[in-house]
Image (cartoon, rainbow over all chains, first blue to last red; front, side, top):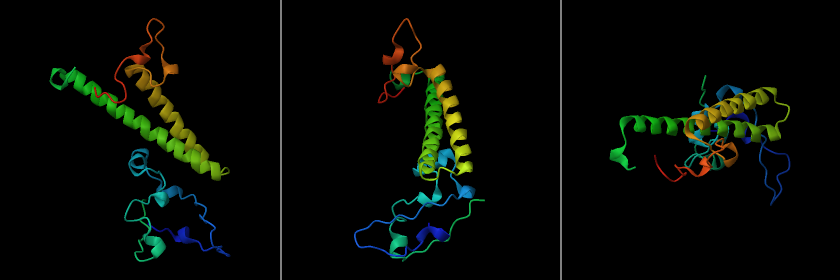
Length: 69
Length: 95
């Protein structure tokens, strides 16, 4: 699920350089330990199961950020 | 000891063991995820507090598990008469 600043652009994209935007601390919607154990992460922003991963990059499916609280 | 010989209390005991082990796994995993996050965000005080909250809880669960079901690591073996580290269940054995 894309979050607002998840697809921050970079000034000078270089061919052959990998670029991973820094993860922002989103304290308000951290998974519970049990939820995190199932998802493989406690950070929703990093929860990219099959079907989610890859879609934002192609931009064909945009998800609303799901508010936990 | 196969399935039908298990008395009901062994069944509940093995359910307790499995659920306690899973809970320990969840908290140890959460602590580790905060650890990884903190490696790149060392000044995030909230995250430091969360790390300690999760890892303290994992320690409690580990102590409780080991007191009830035996050592999870060789170093945690307490029995000075017998090396109980080798007693089952081994990871692939189901109670």
